[in-house]
Length: 444
Ligand code: PMP
Image 1 (cartoon, protein in one colour):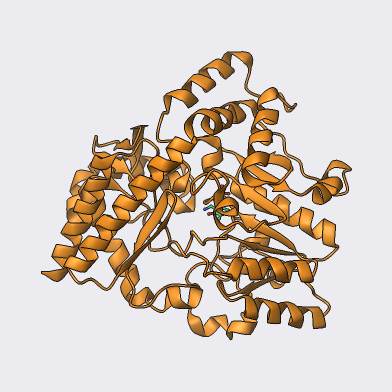
Image 2 (cartoon, protein in one colour):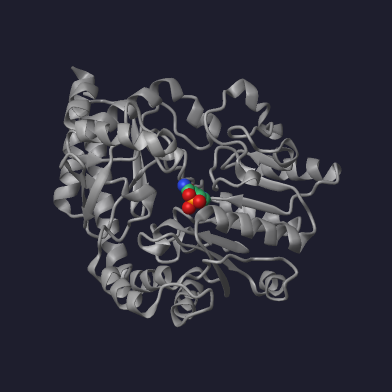
């Protein structure tokens, strides 16, 4: 399968050789690196994309979940065409900023909003606001969760061997890559997902050390260990504990936000955080981010106690796309269509797993889902790592099978598919059929 893909993507190989002269590693971001070379994309239209060799794929990667609207959506194109002749940047607020803010407030039930240009900026600013509000420094996160590439959250993510992690109620703080100051790493503490009891114990231990956390930042449903859903009662317990200790609760909805329900995980699970961070699909393919917050938190932003700033925040071009996306594309009908498609793809994959008796299961929500190659149910980082040796290579093989059958997917076991509103039955059938071929090959 690897050789077949290599032969089909020799144009990408040439691009890679050229790109490597001016771009580090031939790519714009480390997450675009792929061995032996990345696939360079030429264009997209609806659910389809084409690489520079002219290979056509159904896109289930969708820009790490940013393109839930599908590629080149006409409603977003029209909004951008109308905006461009009127100018694209003033660093002053425009009408679209108000309309989008109103819409987000309605969807997520948080009254006050600010904009950023990425998910990393959203979580960075949200954490700073929480630190300013509480007057505390310590940040609590979930082990294995990804919240962007600023120093505070580049801790306890990625492939870390179990022995290094330490005991469940006292996980070590481990930097993700070099260049993160140790003092910052030490200020971030991680706890296991789906375990409110251990969270409270760790909070109490930190309190005894005079290091009560300012903030718990988490995804209500984890989207960077495949998809891991919250167990019943878990989010409610986290809400109660954070209230009890005066800790600001952030739901990082960069991945879930626009993709799993109109009001994201906050609406879906019915637990209200103090802050929400959005990015990815918010901009309909343009760089965007947003922070939602309570009136109380907003006060210290409004009066300049804490600085939430950025030259491109609320960029008119981005917000024209966001407005068109929220008002015309991501409608109730669109969410119903995504639910229909996701039910179909999950049922199709379940059927393959059953027919071939694979050691795997499916999990999904909204527009997102994945096949988990595992004997045990993944509920947190430790159970995720328990099957890394088998699950990792199987996910890599599944990626090759998909690519060779016209399915563009996120590489690696930690990601999931994102369907777009332009996907249809044929796209779902293509995915299930590729998975069927993989299962047949594994059983042969
Ligand atoms: N939070 C979550 C949950 C994410 O998945 C990501 C990106 N994968 C980020 C934050 C960071 O977003 P960005 O890459 O736009 O900085």
